[in-house]
Length: 189
Image (cartoon, rainbow, N blue to C red; front, side, top):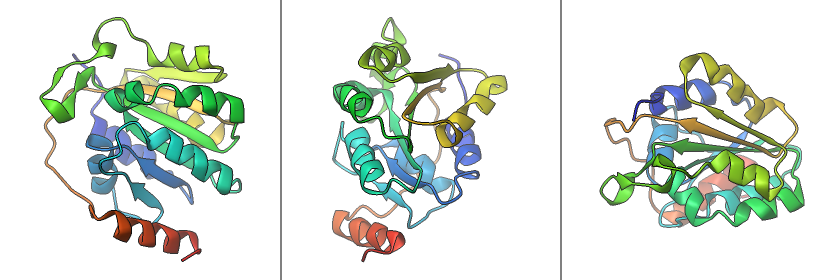
């Protein structure tokens, strides 16, 4: 599968984050966000498959004055697909969700995933009731991802990315440490 370079995409996206809070799904989303520049305003999830969107939703509801960006993968989104209905019901104006979709299960051996064939995550998000959805697959379309920060939420975007081999850059993995660090970054330590 051809596609966007996910590390380049994340680097460009996070360079414009301002004071946005970021919640990452496990694997590539965490590695790529960390490689783009670590921040106490980034909460990395480890061992919580399917929970990036629900975590970001809770954060968006608790911090309505801050933009919240969730960066997750296609396999994790499929595992937590029901969370899109909850996002649609809650309608957090400050939530953006980006799915890095390489069409494979990268963490378990790169088997072909659901989105490599017929499954359309943006259509599923729209079907759940999220009004603003988009899919980007070409570099010329990447400017559309500004909606993740700028458009009234919830915003759901799928970036069709290449199955790449970027060097591993691993953030802290201890959940208690990450939680304390993130709370301190929020000023609620």
